[in-house]
Length: 182
Image (cartoon, rainbow, N blue to C red; front, side):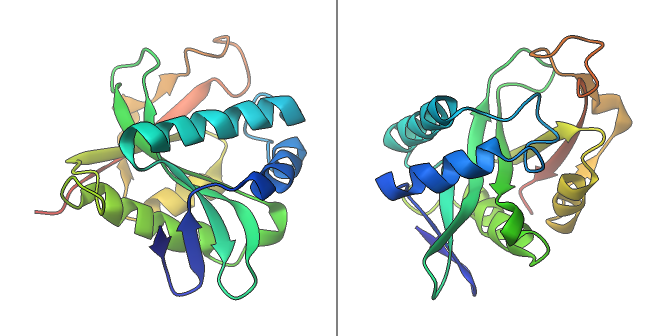
């Protein structure tokens, strides 16, 4: 578990699945993804997240607002292994319910996940030298979070996501990187 001033990043609970399915079904939350997810697809994603925790001890943490216990989404670390010039790579990512937007929660939680990624390998860190974050070119809100946590991009790293047709409106992706501070 990770804590910030306002948030708790923790392992998933069974009661997280219904609000997670609701946010994954929200067309506005999912506007930078190919489509909203069904409840079953959302549950499958939660299962994959838990499998990574079981294997590595870290992953996409469920996020609660301290004092309310309200589940607002996830922020954390996930391995990307699809074929691309930068994979395999540990990606930092987030997905929050619409009601949680505009409060700085994504940035606050991403700083905690970023710091975990760079601490030495063990229960308090992943021991990484570099993390990445990717999104479709049109997802300016996520790119703003990437910049706020210190990530940078190079247009030479931009790519077409291999899991989307090249002419899909969301295929054009940007890559942001961050190296561990010296």
